[in-house]
Image 1 (cartoon, rainbow, N blue to C red):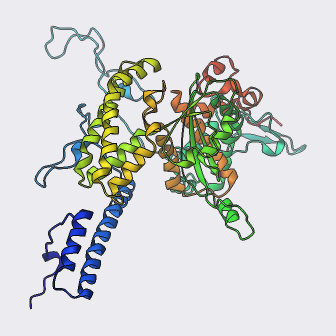
Image 2 (image 1 turned 120 degrees about the horizontal axis):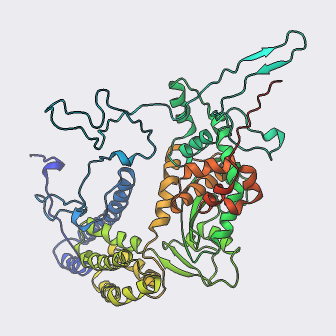
Length: 555
């Protein structure tokens, strides 16, 4: 007997509906097979169908996992080939590719040095033809990139004289351009004064942003610095980060109060471990029902700017939002909330808020089915795409909230009606336990929230801003650092990331902002309202310049 390897056996794929299965079972029972054989064959058929259904659902989960690990391009329907010989198209972006080239004006942080010609000046006779005159034109450009450690160190050796009789010392003063100490600690207690390791606001900011914005943990930065001959231990980095935290804590509190007055909120959450807190929650003596910790992100659209807030702990995203809304003026208009359909986003939030669910999540579920070969959802994806086209038109035309609502009601409502009609008719030919059935049930259950943009002015289609705020910078920080150790460490990270993300939304440079609030920390303590990310430049224009308060003296 010839035994075939599994790779040599090609089985034909069989599609069986429940009715076909019932008919097959009846025919088997009417055959000449014994009762035991009939029961065995029927059980095998049902077992194979159950396994196939489980594999289909597991396939979707595996695809999600692979996408999270390796990333994926935009979910364009053109990415799946129709046959094995057809190559997938690009994402559909027709913009010309620049291959990463930047012009000389694309480097605002670079130092520019003008170099005069060594032989010629404007108006000289042309040495080539001897008849014309040379006229200055646009300069040629040469680029000199240099590699350094993220932080550099400059050591001043201040000459000092010591009296051999009275032991009085006389030390040279620092140069006028020295930036040894720029952190304002004039209102701090004596034990909290800035030390030599954390006295420069720019250095403190770089370390804090490397950790919480760019995803470089302290131990990795310490390794880089050490190998460049500029050691910067992890404990020293923590002292530097803490200076940024001290400068921003009062601003963070005011940002919470400002966010309560927003007209539109967006929230999301993601797991994040706080080691000490989790150990305490899982201890035998703990009576807490909730044993896990997470980070919630809440965006609030206010008249001043879009405020981004991070909260890490046991509280759910809805509970953090409810706490913010407790600071809201009772007479303010009813706010709007855009989130996904997770119950955590609404846990603890009262009914005095208009809720809309993210249409991206619904489309993604249909797209995953289509990607796995289910062409029944192709038409639904096309209709949802029409809605996004209308929303893009509203953005391009810069329409107001009411004008955008009218545009959607005129052009998107027919497509939404077709989607609803398809959902209502689809259950007739979809099995209950089928993956498509789960998606249809999800869409039907949250349909009013998915279509809030057709009835409420200013309600967005998706929660993409909150998802981006979770992925960047927080996801980079979590991927690099893994966890927080203490609740205080989590609070430090939340404050720094909130300030940096709000600066980005306000169009400000987070590095410049974090430096300035350290250099004017005593003024920030007295009036944090004047040092918010969206108005600090106005205050800075009238503030006194920071003074280097290095403690060198002649005695």
